[in-house]
Image (cartoon, rainbow, N blue to C red; front, side, top):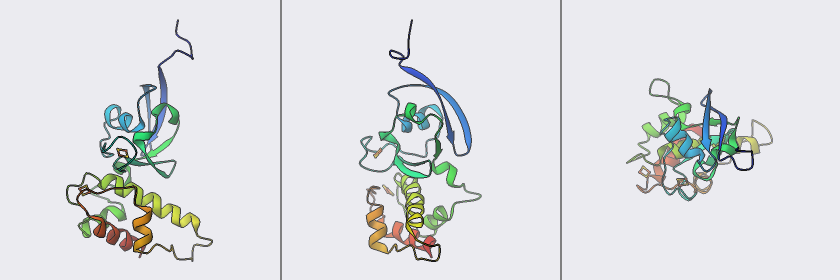
Length: 169
Ligand code: FES
Ligand code: FES
């Protein structure tokens, strides 16, 4: 009879984009695969699957994270936001609109990760300020540095920075 030590699957609950999902996952399943394969939320992309490209970036409890490196079972009860939760065509997130306005993508494969990472980065910069009146202190170099975990094989970096700067303004 299985016990906790030998059980290889667990029932977990994830709150994704404001909606609660209960699912049974193998303990080896990553958060990325749970989102894509079990919940059909295919916005987060699998690039390297090794924590090196950022294509799989989502927000976990509001903080950006590479979902390919996280085990779903370790995030029972967690609040997850994927690109689908940022906005949609009818009501895009300001960053999504800025990416469109600035033409900040070519193939678009990295874009969901870039967007989630930018949302997380802006939240980090806001949290670091001593007062809401203080500027975010994100010039082009700082944005590039803070977004350096998100690779773009199409080389859309200058326009991605343009889009982030538009939102900061
Ligand atoms: Fe997760 Fe590349 S797919 S970092
Ligand atoms: Fe193609 Fe970034 S837009 S990888």
